[in-house]
Structure formats: structure tokens, C-alpha cells
Length: 164
Image (cartoon, rainbow, N blue to C red; front, side):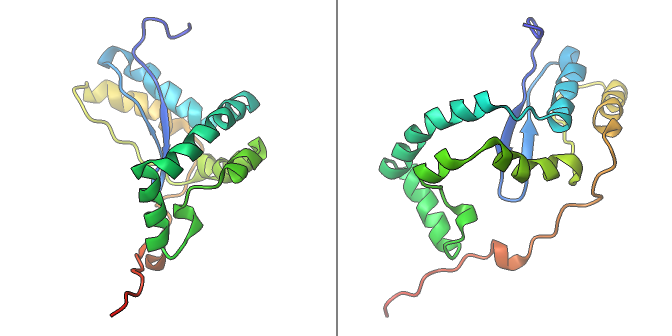
């Protein structure tokens, strides 16, 4: 309700080499959008209610991964990555075993001080936007100066041997 009439929202996603916060807004709501995104970094709100909601949907994900093409895509990705579990879909039992503490241990250190990159696309006033960035992301405690270097072995694809 506090954001009624505002065009703001924050999406969180996990990418191969990073976590990403994204959103779309209007020039009038850009400052609020940036405040919300920075708040998600400062106080991510690890709540049992969110975990319970996610666990309620876990069986649907499990069914989808077992019965649809997207599931096969994830299985192939894990296989091509040498059965590296970071590229796998956990079992329903593994999903249901997760706790808030597990999520905090995984995300907390990354949100606290890891490298941060801000990108904006669209029609905006440069001067006020720089001010908004400095007042939100620029006000965060000091962070890593560059992204973690990922070992090339972790990015390599290992094709299985074929008969031949």
C-alpha cells in the first residue's frame, strides 16, 4: 500500500556468475526504485513466510523439471558441466530441507560486501540520476572493487565420450 500509485518493483534472480536485482520504473519514480533496490541489499528480509511459500511451490517445480523440456535442459546442463551440482536442480527432498539459515549463509555474505555494478537503461535526467545513485548505492558500505575471478575450469563444458 505504501507504494500505491508508484511504478516500482524489485526482482531478484540468480545468474551463472552473479546475483541480479532488476526493476522497471518511470523517471518520476526512479529515486524510490533505487531506494527499494538498495534496501533489498541492506536488509534482504529473510522471512520464514517466504520460505514456506517457496516450499509450497517446490512440488510444482519438481513436477515441471521431471515432465517438461525445461527440466531436461537443466539435466543436460549439469551433465555437460561434469555433473557439477551448481548447475543441477535439487531434488524435492533437498528443496524442502532448506532453512532460512541456509539462505542467509548463501546470500548474506554476497549482499554484504561483494562487487556491485549498477546499470541503467532508458530516458532519464543524468544529473538527478547520479544524485540518486550516490544517495542509495553510493551510500552502501565499501564493497569489493572487482568481481570474483572465476576459474576457467568452472566454466568449461565437458562433452561426454562417445562411442566411435
